[in-house]
Length: 247
Image (cartoon, rainbow, N blue to C red; front, side, top):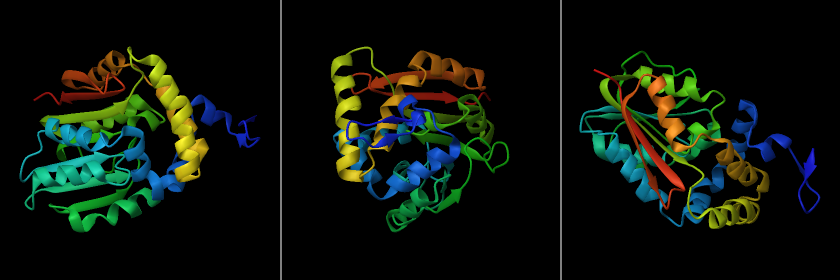
């Protein structure tokens, strides 16, 4: 067990960016009340624009049924709801009950029928080809088995449907700023705003161990997706991947 500068013990898994699934669930349960506020602060409000782009790339249309896996507090799910309309449906899944509780509080602003389901992204409780698209924002980094999670998303999307992944990554440019922001500023924001420095120490550590954009694209293809493309956002600190289930 290592210690922070103030003497508080820190789980080695936090420092390494690797926690067991129960540890990840407990962490998100803890930070759920301040999760949206921290996202706004960490991204300077740009996360809303990124989620809108993810919804666009999903090609969700009126009447579509769309899955948002690792939905957190449901912000991308709500963006998708504005695309599918009252004749469509958005299913929002997460394994953190506290995150889902905060997501459900936003239900009144939804523009489409929505389901919030407590479930495991590594064993999605849906049949094959159940959705027109599947998305995940800032969630695949926390999966205990990334390849299995990618394969599950591809499995539940119909032929011709889209899979979209929005995730933080280590940029090729602006590395000094990136290191300062994520290794110094973000943990302090976590301590001051969420009163949980450990969770926001885990964040940059988990990003460092996550595959770079070309490798994630390759693994999406290995999971059965075609036409996989990706683009960097915010000077490459965030990457949007998207692919299609072959027809």
